[in-house]
Image (cartoon, rainbow, N blue to C red; front, side):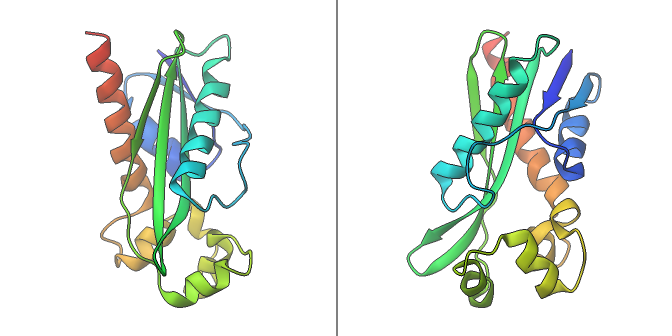
Length: 167
């Protein structure tokens, strides 16, 4: 199969390649059609679906996958949120969400000023390209989890749902 992924982010591509190890995975730069920093579950999911649909509509794609990372507020706390979508050639949409962990107040404060999480995390962790490497989840779990693993979990859920429907 040919699976198109709506991202050039190495963490997302690694996740899809790991789960669909016997298939051809193609990266594709597509617009999520949501803000560059999704700030709710709904917006993050919407971005993942847009990316997956765009990829699925590519003539050569068997499946399109969109993965989106965002944040969401619960009460006064800010949490990481992650969503994925898989769209097949029949336009069936499969969705799944991933891990959530609270972010420190100082991260919440910076993001409330309109900054993106990736930008805030680079300053906070004093590292470059955090969003393309371990991500905030890697920083705040002391490396026990990273973006590759987090998105791999979501892609596994998507693939399992799609396989179940296509038995």
